[in-house]
Image (tube, rainbow, N blue to C red; front, side, top):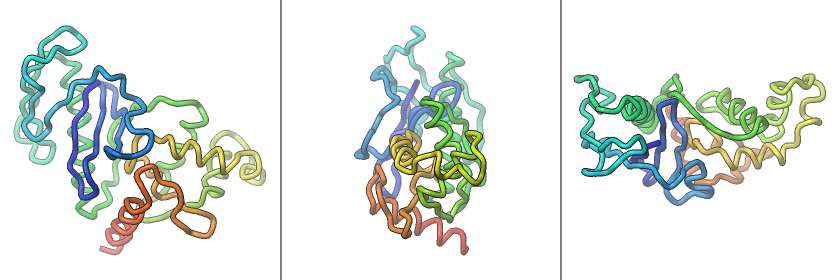
Length: 215
């Protein structure tokens, strides 16, 4: 797994990916930061297209410069000695491009490859979050009904069989902020409650999407 840092209008965002997909996206100071990190990751500089010189990766190969990391221009193909590195950096490229579009006020309308580990219930919650449209919000109760239906409950009983409190706990543990849009979940009265990245960031993201939806 490798990491990189994205400089957003809301502060630094740390991205972690492996060959299968994005493993984590956190604001540097948010709760549960780095929940999927092992401590052995190597950081990749997306702006320069390089790993730190002389660093040894987990497959025993020296980290080398990887060219063609500009996901927007697509001018050059990527080159690296380790296929594992190429695949993971390609994931980060797509996430980088997604974030560029998002913070420019656009709905990216696609999802980069994700590789998220969690319980079956957490996965059900995170998949339900992905279905909440850009520029819209749901309450914890509404999300609980969505999760219940996804888990096989009937539409009439889904909200009673899945606890909004349990859903809220899974939302708070979401390791891929913004892309898996936990910021779109609000209180029953529409209030901005509980966001690992902080309420002000949540307000910014919702306002950004509201403006982008009207554009």
